[in-house]
Image (cartoon, rainbow, N blue to C red; front, side, top):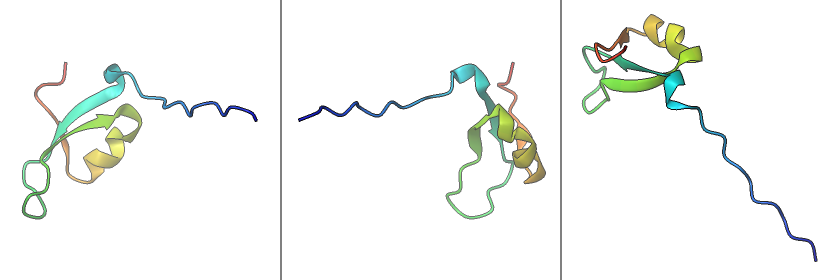
Amino acid sequence: MTKSKKDTVVTQPPSTLIPMIHPLPRHPDDPITANVHSDEVTRWLNEGWQHSEQEK
């Protein structure tokens, strides 16, 4: 019998996440803050999100 290797989960370092905010939720209870991967920021900006003031 052979042992299977556990699947490894690759996580992005926190430095690649950009804090963003949406001034008005589209639906009740929608989130207004998000940590967005740097590769996705342009798409989120096009959808009305903005850079959060917490960004440094």
